[in-house]
Image (tube, rainbow, N blue to C red; front, top):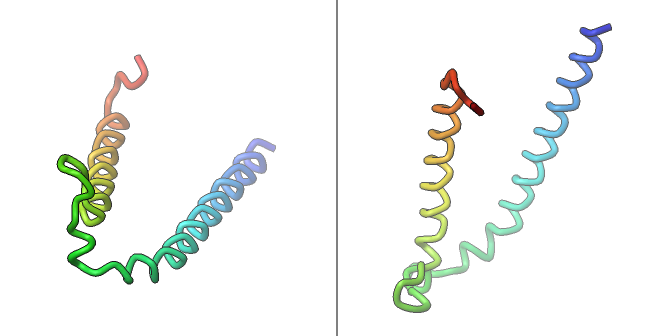
Length: 83
């Protein structure tokens, strides 16, 4: 009985991940044309001093995601996680 419940949980988890991947793919396709329509000069413009340009925003998001991924990996290796 326990194996059936574990299998059902795994199937549910895979379906949620598949749904999330599909949603991400759809969002990327929807955003593709408007983003490609922005020329390089406009992408580099800063709206105000100290504000990020359109080009800098995705760079920050990628850097942040990479840093957070490293933190999660380190936490998973820690014997004292959550204590």
